[in-house]
Length: 548
Image (cartoon, rainbow, N blue to C red; front, side):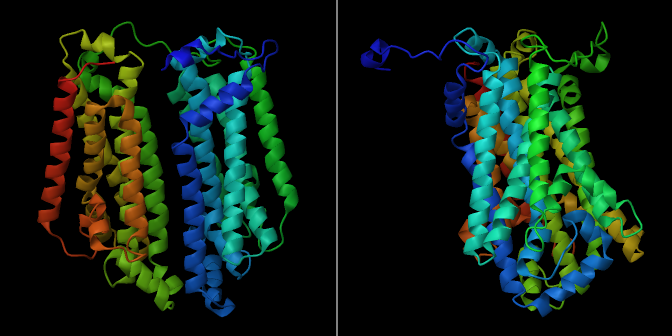
């Protein structure tokens, strides 16, 4: 900082009013998220472009798309996963394949964004410091919602432009983008409500994600219920409302108004709740624990397990449901895609083998492993959160050393990643085995296909540990960048025929493609060795640096 900067007078936020300082706080939020926020937006647009381009190339005519229309109509599992298919145009196919997930991704982005700049900052004490200046009481909440609004508008605009460039009708592209962005706004407002209810950022995210999972499940049940079932459940879900816009068949523009009205109503509820609580408090108080800790909580390992149990239960349930859903589709994958040589070849490149069902299941196990890697990295990064908020200090002044403390978190990471992967394999094995009439074979087969991904998952956890041990301030960005690179290389590298040197960067490129592929212990041993080396180097670095 130069002398000129020190001499420059600071321009305080304009005094007066509950919204004083909104512009300054919004600019600060954008600056803090200048990397992650564009990354979220870019990924949604990139996946939209990739899916639309692939469908356009693989299904160039209405006749070639008719097989999917028929199969979706008779396969409720596909409707549960993606929604109902209305029409056989390329736009209708894109709508069916990705609109539900574009809306879900926009919602996830919004939840993380709003809670980061409201409850997380309040929990860390930053909002109390900001509030001592000329900043209105409702300014932080307003700034977070304003940034979320701008981010979802950017998603809507960019996705619409991508679809128009790829040749889809402009009106449908705009409706598609607005449906995804509108759902993101609903979840942004929902996150604002959760931030008022919970005393912790973790609790607020848990509430928001629980509601998100529930409405996704309602949408899935409603879409797959059939003519005689409870199809009305889709109308209870904001994700279902996005789907019900029907962008490329007969757009229901009024459904966008439903999304907007719900977002406004939830935001109004958040403002009302914020006005009736104390700074730092939540309307749902934390439940007091027992007066004395049990034997299991007398060491850092038991504490790490206790802190992660709730998150692990949620991830495990989500991966089990995901595995069950894709396993129920696997038996019919041949009739759905087998007559399309281009799509069959694409599946074989990603799955690494010629049998279409095995290639599909291998690809699903890889996707589950990427999700498990995100879980593992989030567990490791809990160390950084504990240190930055000062919660690690009371623990480390005891005889517990920092290496033992961090190693306990790594043990929970390994165990949790194994449980999450097993849940995915078990769900896929049970449903696929039930439909194929071969439970005894398919359950252990798909459990093995899931568990073989564990070494690759732990490599990314090791990267997170090394980054935290070296520079905790950079660890979050470095760890999630590594996960993002692995996702991009693993999912898009084979389809784009990337060079082998690029594919080798992702640890998942070295995992045997199971079920059906050849098994080799050598790459698994190398991956395990790399994970252990990275984690050990992180522990050594942690031992020799000062704590924040």
